[in-house]
Image (cartoon, rainbow, N blue to C red; front, top):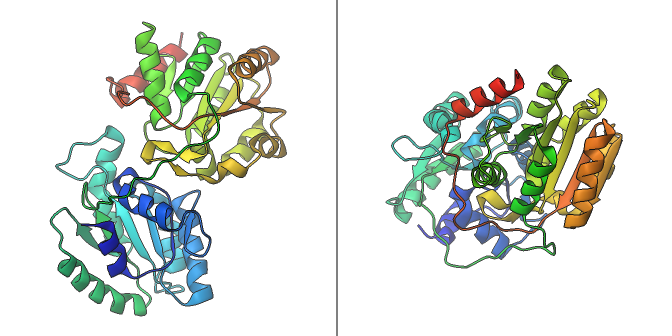
Amino acid sequence: MKIEDFVNIIGADFYTGVPDSQLKALCNYLMHTYGIDPDHHVIAANEGNCTALAAGYHLATGKVPVVYMQNSGEGNIINPAASLLNEKVYAIPVIFVIGWRGEPGVHDEPQHIYQGEVTLKLLKDMGIEHFVVTKDTTTDELKAVMADYRSRLEEGHDVSFVIAKGALSYDEKVTYRNEYSLKREEIIEQIAKAAGDDMIVSTTGKASRELFEIRERNGQDHGHDFLTVGSMGHASSIALGVAINRKDRRIWCIDGDGALLMHMGAMAVTGSVKPANMIHIVINNGSHETVGGMPTAAGGIDIPAAAKACGYPNAVCVSTKEELDRELKTAKERQSLSLIEVKCAIGARDDLGRPTTTAIENKEAFMAELTK
């Protein structure tokens, strides 16, 4: 289905969400049509954030907003959906548009399998009626569903469209770029070299895929790396948990700007604990690149200042290879919690692969290395 038809049938004029590759047609349409426009389109930090933002829109206008997200974000909406939107509380109507990763019967990555199995069940448990949009869904079918949904929305109920793989299309090409030249894979290779035999926890998405391939290319084992294939925004907390329980090992966290924003409160916890054996590196390209390249709010944030405000004793920003080399060495030598923000270009190799080990094999190898 053409995304223009989908949007016209829904008939909303405000969208907020977290980008998803399954919803690339919608995301690109919104960026091409509105860009980031507070009156019509806001990319949020996490799914709970955009759900509350949508509630505020309804309170101010009386209109029905759309919240878009990957199904992995359902966990983040459970609290606001149950205790804010629900008809037994404030009865705030919202249309959810959810990309269905891990759809049963469709091959996907391991972090999506269980989430895909419970996607529809979670919506049912939250009292959110759903309709699955597939490649075969016609505009007439969608119009009929939307006609029924409108009556439910008027009663303060929430509804959802679950988008199967390839269900939506958009012909306009949208290109995302920034002003920086450092490539993320080169940055991660520098980090891995500086870390040596230290342990690394890397964030979800292309960063972990690139770290895996760097180890393969260099003939190194993977036991020093925990590749966080899911749980976006939680890599730094995983690293913190390891660091405070293994003070004899230095722990490096390779984070991303979108991931950092998703659960930014973790910085305050890390800053309060101040583990001397943790180095937190945020690779910032101002983009949700792994799911298509749509912008994050991190392009306008002073991340080192935020880290220092959260209690990090050391925090800097670099944008060149030479600056990064210097700060990596300094951080490793100082024995104090450090954050390094690295400004990064948008883009990755077209032939970038995925880890060939399973998530459980990765966990067991990492734990075995920690015991040495």
